[in-house]
Image (tube, rainbow, N blue to C red; front, side, top):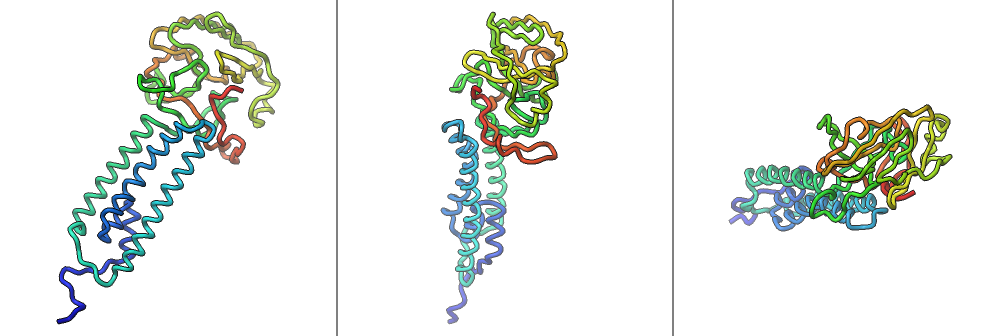
Length: 318
């Protein structure tokens, strides 16, 4: 009897194991018959997205982007290690491997289909309820947020179970009431029941004037050269302090608004170049989908990376 002949024995090919692990975390281990380890890699890489988002929200705001980066790198490391492990294990099994029930084409295909569904739903859940990243394409929030900034937005706001309630002074992302295919980013100035009066560059909420003082400098050196065109003003609302700017040409804006129930009044920090509640009216609170948390990357359009802006908190007082 030939001891080198085994029934239902097929060699494991390292390159196939590597390719399977690349297609889907854990698939390479399944190909090698290591179901338990395969499931561990599959779940570990999958839950990394919501777990990293949740940890970033629980930790200090100043390191939210760093926590996301570290956990994402760990997940990528696990993914790579799973591929290496699948390759090495297949090499050891290249001689004699008895096929198992998991080594059938329909099992592989089922895992891939389920994996795509599983991962896409985890990503959708994370973006809808935890954190989402947004690219800023406009200058309507200068000097607080610049064109080319990429920000992290906290989606756990504006709901009964959310611990972070909306406050005056928050920078928020919301659905444009006049075009629901667009998202805007503005500063929340007034909540339901508040009275807002705008008289040229003077703004008051519930009889309290927001203007604190005129300042000579703004946060980003890129805009210093345009200081002759604008007046930069330090505003304060409740315990939040921030900079806004107006063009030095005469302003003719006059507005008197009582914010209705269930609505909010929002303004861009670049007051002369922002389409906000002065143009689109008050915004339903239910249309506010997130609160800007931190800048995790910034690059001048067509220019260099703004390293000094990475990690900057958006809703921190100046």
